[in-house]
Length: 360
Image 1 (cartoon, one colour):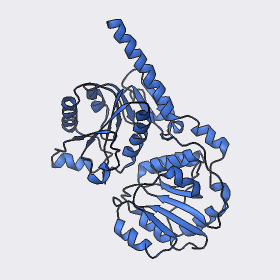
Image 2 (image 1 turned 45 degrees about the vertical axis):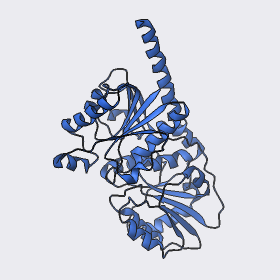
Image 3 (image 1 turned 90 degrees about the vertical axis):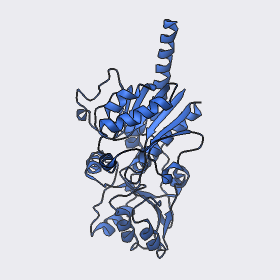
Image 4 (image 1 turned 90 degrees about the horizontal axis):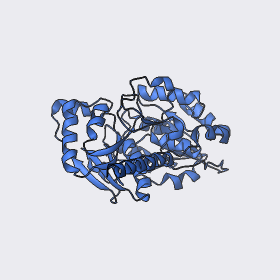
């Protein structure tokens, strides 16, 4: 089976799309799939995250000034001309059709999906928004209500729909255990970009915490805004440790009491692990998601104002806020998204093989 991932990462886009595609790619690779990553304009900082066992296609970055402005806001949909350039290159480069193309990109809508059938048999779209699509499998693990999706949302008939929190792309299971550490270990991540520069502001607030009671572990890669300021500031704070490169969180989380995260793929992994994280939104779209997650009572939220220090301190003293109760967890996260998707792949593969036999 040949599977391609059409995904980009940059200082504007962030790395969340790329990392969740790598998770799926690793799962499929273990199932003997041949994996391709199809990327346009991926910077050197992000290329290194793609494992060498995968085949990398670098799509030429040949956009004009107006098109380049569109790329600066990754929520904007690409123009027809941009889509055509991308599709034309891949149609020539991929001489034998892929079995599956997995698209995880805000800019590439149903027009791109339709044209992609030039070089793939099936398409899966991973989406965080509610935009029209044309695909065989649609995956959206945001806590949307059914009313978000109108009649003209799924343009292809018989699309398999994987919608809701239970389709969170993670191989984690409930592993959180309340610890009796003399010092509480807190993990903080605002993603690989942090466009609104909130991380430094939060770190400054954390520096006032009692150093005998708390240790803070902060993910701050070189791609993040204010990186040098953050590193220099933390040199003088003994209980704040910086991680500049991605770490194996599955091995690290057992040491952690509490997690703080932007509303990103990291936050959903923390939920899948069993944390009840403190969520921080960075734009209006994330604010909508935050409200939906708060309704389900599976995250914590504190305003980043002058009372943040007091409110966070109180939150950390209440053990019931550290984790999701098993009953709540099972309600939202029992399904294994990767296994569910693989079942669909196998079913479609058998159907395609049967059709070939009939034709012969």
